[in-house]
Amino acid sequence: MFNAITKEKYSLTRYVGNDINVVIPSEINNIKVTVIGSNAFSSMNIKNINIPDSVIEIEYGAFYLTNLKHEIKKVIERRFGLNVFYDGGRWKTFLTKQLKNK
Image (tube, rainbow, N blue to C red; front, side, top):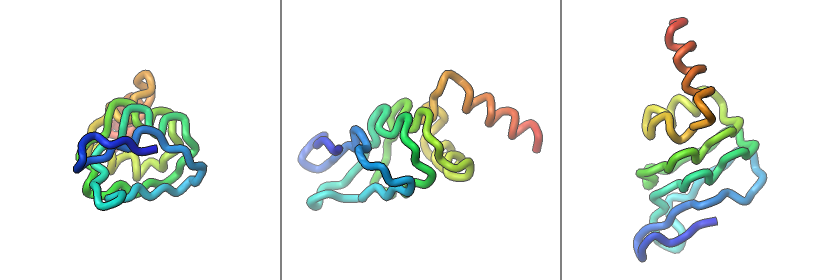
C-alpha cells in the first residue's frame, strides 16, 4: 500500500503481499518512492528485500519482527539505523553480541 506524501513522493505504508522476496519499486506512475513507513513490514515473513536508492528514509519499526536474513539486516542497519528493526532491544542485543565475538 502506497500513500502520496506530495505530488513528487510516495511512502510505502504497509506491505500487503505474501512474497518472501520483496522488491520495492523506485517509482510508481513516475513518482519516486522515498519512504518506508513505520511498521510497513512488521511481523511479515520476508526473507529478502531490495530497497531502491530512491528510498531515503525508513521509519521506526518498519522491519519489526521480520525474518530478513542477517546480511540484509546489516546492510539496512548501516544505511538507516537500528530503529528500523526495533523489537524491544532483542536485535540490538544480538548485534552487540555478534560484534563482541569478532
